[in-house]
Image (cartoon, rainbow, N blue to C red; front, top):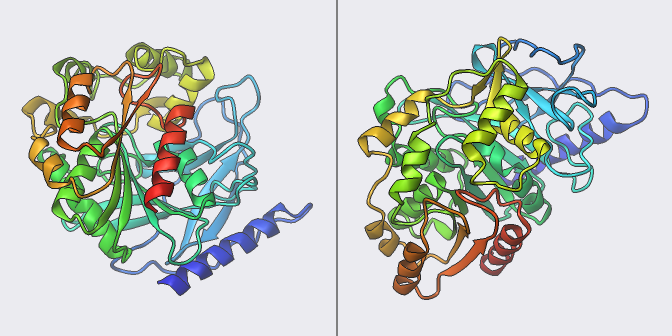
Length: 402
């Protein structure tokens, strides 16, 4: 596995250098048949080009562990739609996902999320859950063989793209980073049985992923639902979780915040334009990010929506709302928190959070005095982890427990 990982990274970097030479075009990778089981690569169906985007997107192939991964890249003209360069990944049902740059200074050259500044490469991989769903994970290659593994787990309606900038920074610092899309989100398959959209089921999927990749131990960063999952992992398999970052989540979730989230999850129809999607997102999240600019909201829309037949659709299965309605999405976390106390923890709280109260933070610190707690100003539920305070806290904590 270590040798294969090094070969993957070497091939990726050679193709990157080839693609960036003046006047040169990258040669396509050789086609290989995906394996019948275990990890594989998906060849997505041809997506519909969203209105306003110019044609002629360049396509390249990046050889991964078991085969090539098709990715498209294009430059969005200034003043039309999105403000920066984006990667376009055609997904199931002909929808297109717009992936934001890994870090400032990106020069993708038609390849997956290559940062010219830190030289990290994002590879898309797929695996099967134990009940047969096809699930997606982004792996950030930039670490040496045997590097520590950082597992980033997203919130209820979010996906692994939330951690793109954090992953690029961590990869440049020597981490191997895994950013999975939970079932029903992003590039992962939707579950035909909505009753399986539960934290315990998501944790089982993560354990299956780690077994597929032969990863014995991880450091976990979890936002909201992802923090719940990290707590469950640490309680169930404390030897597997080296450290845990909880982003605006604790054993008690306030009714006010749950009601706000339940008020929009799975309830909004598709938007007919980018402007409409931006306006809706800003309306539901303004209290969480009061200082966001129009460009910030556009980035959030690109992270959380797909373009399907000209409509902007939230990038998750609306049926995930069922868990909020029946309570299965909110388990009792105090016993799990107590069981996970041997694991070093950092807790981030948005200063404006309506889901994690200061009283709950105080109770957590009383039970676990060595818990590190940091408040992120001008943020509700939940910080993006790109804020200076959050970034400094997370990077400092991970360096101390590496």
